[in-house]
Structures are given as structure tokens and as C-alpha cells.
Image (cartoon, rainbow over all chains, first blue to last red; front, side, top):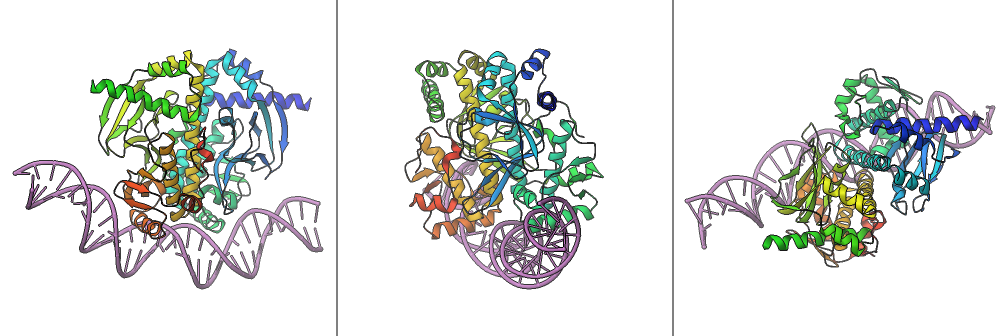
Length: 249
Length: 249
DNA sequence: CGTACGATTGAGAGACTTCAACAAACGTGG
DNA sequence: CCACGTTTGTTGAAGTCTCTCAATCGTACG
């Protein structure tokens, strides 16, 4: 019955997420709750889907944190996105047969697998849900664009601040973060792989942000004393997240 | 009748492009040829769609070259994608009301506007075309991921090489480039905005690539004496382009 | 209580930037 | 068709951001 409870909240988080990007009708909510979910636990640092794989199902992140990354032949790694509960990080596998990147876990996580066939059925019966899912992958793409910009045209200091603004905003959207405090599961090495920096420089950049009073980052919790100040140094403009209601100032 | 001719080849290029990513049936080709196209010319450096706009139509690039970019408050600019004929660079506007970036022209270009309504009708009647268009936006996203990696984890030398490999591969896919020679419309400043480098360093990087015999770049034509050599320094793996037939080695 | 991983610090090197000047190419109008 | 102005490409020198290497420290976990 713990499993039943998990199933309940699993669909809840999906619906909460979809509500942030489109107007879910009662009918559609009902249909979404009918999605089969094969729930499993994954360890921190474990890979959920591998580069080169040909998935036949998508992963709904129920709790914990996932990330997508590309490994280079020379051993380097680039993290290309961070995911919070409610996200379906490999939704693209519905129309792209083979994975061009891997999906890993930043922390111990709970994921639910949904067969492609179930999603396709759902879309056939509820075209608006299909549009919403398409929209979701388009928002993914918008975030990638912002990341290109982050890595290409922002300094380490600005880029780090931007990554934090985005993460907290996404967490707030699904009601998993307070106004100014938020779980923050990344190690400094992972922050480096996400921002294109070396671990050492990540450390120094964090110290700068700390001593400037922009962040308080201890262990796995980030708090932001002055949101507007951080947003300004990051040049953070949440428009690219395409959220329905502005949860940000 | 010049206009009629343009219309003909306009639909041709769209079909040629879609053929690179899915199997277009005769019926579907017919339907695609029925799409209304409002053709217009755009100057080099002119903007086609502005950041913040709410488009009601999509742009098919018929000839010339477009690019997408984000402007930062501090005046910097990041180019996030390059587009070749056959592309519909603002297809995302179908489900994302407001533009989070701008669309500009690298060279004098011909674009055809297609009303959202016409695309939606087409998708309703031919769901497989809908899937193909979704797939196209997913490939866009895959390219963004690769660009994050390019800017974050490749050196100037490697990143420049990678950009060229990708561009030439896309051009070859729609049969607009020879094996080892290709139009290449970017100025060095634009190359800098695409790779996250300063114009000066672009210049020096190009000289290095030239003196290593990897590229011959004169005016607006790029030729590649040894594809495998360039591909190797770039760590270019075309899988992320998700082309149906491998046009690359 | 040791071991391993993550965080921190220092020092030196390298990649890339900025500033500034100049040369070459291009388009345009006379 | 040439002269001109503007854009693009090229070069030098100095500076800065970020990296690498390497060592140390803290801390969580078995």
C-alpha cells in the first residue's frame, strides 16, 4: 500500500507539472491518471537511460533529481539539463529512436516508466495532451538555447548565478521550493560540468557569490537572500521557461 | 511566372528537407504542396522575427541562410542555431506563443510564410506529418544540446571545426553542398557569436585550421580537403542530427 | 576509525580577451 | 568605372579569466 500511495502522488506530480504549462481539463486529468507507471528507485550517480539506447518507454521523475549529459571521446562531460520532479526528461524518445545523450541521477530518485504505446494512445484520444507534450519538449529546447547562451556569453560568476535562478524557478513552479530556499543537489564537479567550468573554478566562483551575499549554499540547500540581486547579476529573464503563470518577479 | 517557379521550388525544398527526417508518402507530399506560402525577400542582417513577438505564422527558408540568436542586456549576442534551406526555424511558435529569441538573416534570403492555421489543418488531416514536425523540433533540440557541449567543453579550435562539420552535413543532407565544398555565409564576428569567442580569436583559430590543412575558407566558400581529419579534431558524431540516411562517413 | 569523496587552497601556466591600429574587400553613388 | 566609405579581416601587445596540477582539509559512511 506504500506502493499505492506512491502511485497516487506520482500522477499528482505529473499533473502539477503539466498545469504549469497548459490548462489541464478534468477529463484530461482523469486520462493522465490512467497512465500506467512502472515505478522504480535509482541510486545517485546511476544512469537511467544510456546514450545510444533505443527506449520503448519514457521516464517520469517522481522524486529526486535527474540530469542529461553528453560524454565526449576525450573523457570530458557536459551536463545539458537538470530535471525536477514532474519532468519527463526523455520525452523526445517518442520520436527520436536512438538516444544522443545519457540520463543520470543527481540524487537517489524515484522514476516511473511509461510505455511509448501508452503515451501514443493517450495522445490519440486527447490531442490537446499531445500538444501539451509537444509544448513541453519545445520548452526543453528553449532551455537548451538559454544554456548555450549561458555557457557561451556569460562569465563564470554570471553563469553560476543563472543556473541557480533557473533551478529555483523550476522548483518553485512545481511547489517544491520556498520563496528563497530550495534543495540543491549538485556537487561542485557537477556544477562544473553544467557550466563548462573546472571544479576548482566552480569552488572559487561560489565563494565569490557567497561573499557578495548573493547565495547561502550549505550542503544540499541553497538559499537566496536577495532574489532581485541574484537575478540581476545572472541577467535572468524567466520568459524562456514559458510558464503559464509568472511564479517569478 | 517567376513567382510561380519560386513557389514550385519552395515546396520542393520543404519536401526534400522532410525526406531527410521521415518517409514522406505520395499523399503527404501532395498535401504539403498544398500549403499556402507567402513568399518574400529579406536582406542580409535583417531580422525576420523579433524576440518578444507573437507570430501567427512560421517561416520556411527557401534560399539563403537564417540564424537564431539571443541578445543579452549587456549587449552581447549568442547565436544559437544556423539554418539552411528547407528549415522552418520558428516552428516552435506553433506551441510557444511568444518568441524567446530572434530570427535573423545571414545572407540575402527568400522565406515563405505559412499561417499557423494552415499547419494545424494539415496536421489534423495528416497526423504523420504532425509527428514529423514534432520530430523536426526535437532534432532542433538535439542540435542545441550539441551546441551546449560545443561551447562548454570544446576548445576554440575543436568547436570551430565542429560548427563547420555540422553546417556542411546539414547542407549535404538537402543536396546543397558537394562532398568537400560548401557555401559558408558567416563572417568572423558571427562565427564568434556562434562559438562564444571574440572576433579576434576566431580569426586566429581559423588561421590555425587553415595552416593545419583542415579547411580552405575563402570568401563565402568553405572547402574541406580531408573530411575525416576535420571530423576527428571536432569529435563530430553526426548521430545527434538524426538523419534517416547517413550522408556522412 | 579508516577510507573515500567532496570541498578548499596555492601557485603557475595557458587560452582567450581587450584595445588599438591597419589592411583588404565590398558595395554604392557619382 | 572609379572614388569613397563602410564593413570585414588581420596583426601586435598586454591583460585577465579560467585551467591544471597538487596538496590539504573536512566529513560522511561503512
